[in-house]
Image (tube, rainbow, N blue to C red; front, top):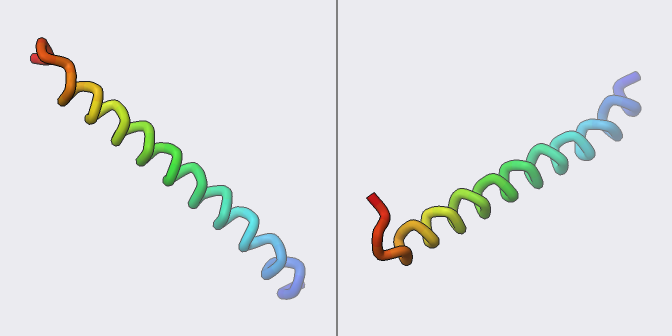
Amino acid sequence: MRIGRRRRAPLSDNHHFRLMIAAARQTDANDRLEAMSPDSS
């Protein structure tokens, strides 16, 4: 049972990591767009 668990863990971790990276990139892009746009209030 432990082996099966260990084999599945990296997949879920990698998926979560990818989601976090995607979210970080999205917010970073939004921040840059807001900073570049002259009339952001």
